[in-house]
Length: 449
Ligand SMILES: [Zn+2]
Ligand SMILES: [Zn+2]
Image (cartoon, rainbow, N blue to C red):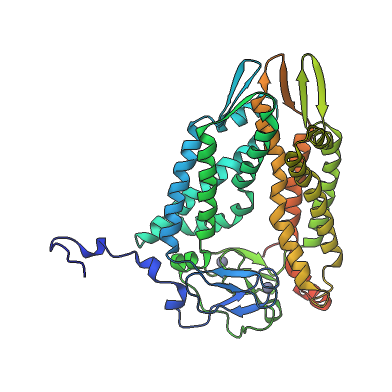
């Protein structure tokens, strides 16, 4: 037993209440959830720290329980923020080429691309690598600080709602892979040195991934806004749509659908349809747009090298062949996977999912859901090529002797990556499980009421 001085307030040593009150300790009634990938309605079991609840029909993880989620994610977010600040303040790479030294720092990446009149690529790189992760960390600190002191800070619910939309667009981990590939690519050209910011950014990326993993949205939403009772008559063991209810895509609470097929969440105020309206049409349109952009991405040069007055335009495929010939197998394989296998494979698999959608769960729906989950996960890794181009272009600027400039294919390839990511988001995976007769009755009107 610890004896405290009489004047010392005991609550200093008491842990925050939020970390000791997981939802299953407080609620008396069953907490229903509709699987966001197959629409199966289930009751969440009582979870202990380290346990996970999965959908019984398609095995999608629904809730992961952590020990002390508020303290843990707050601590990781603060540490990641410090590492990010260090990585922005120091040089990232140094390259000595023909007696000229180039230093690269992270904020300098955008200004180099702007100097080459690539504003859209510059904005995309800055947003995905630095700005969105920074906003995400600040949001986590804002939310968890409010919960740890016992009173949520203003706008907590809107911020928690915005967080769910940020997840796919934060690409610090892809950028680190791009930095490693460019390191190997450039190391043969001159004297090469890693700066302190490189290690700080690796630390940031690791802490950031741990912070993402430590977040427990189910607990967070429960601590922020409690949980309303499930709609009367809703029972586990059938799809939500057949019972006239739908699960909120943001906070998970099950709400009753209106006659138009839309619902408004009673907890987070999100307005959402039973199925994404015109999901297949939108997915097909985005697949077509991404496929069309893949042509200029391969026809035009990605990077143009100039050495001793000679100009060498380099397309994506040309760059891969050159790397093979130079013996850089690792770089060639990574770029081939990121720029050819992933985009083409993703577009073809998504087109196949659209073609066979609505055949009902009999046609191996579980395997199709797994395919959807894989293409959803790998899509962002195609950005590796854009990040490699950005770093190489920023580093190799040794005046008239050797220089590398970005080509028009960079913008086109960036468009392929983003359009195909949007296509995957537009596809409503619950269509895989809907039986053909249900599909028309479950389809909502095109616009919100
Ligand atoms: Zn499911
Ligand atoms: Zn909600």
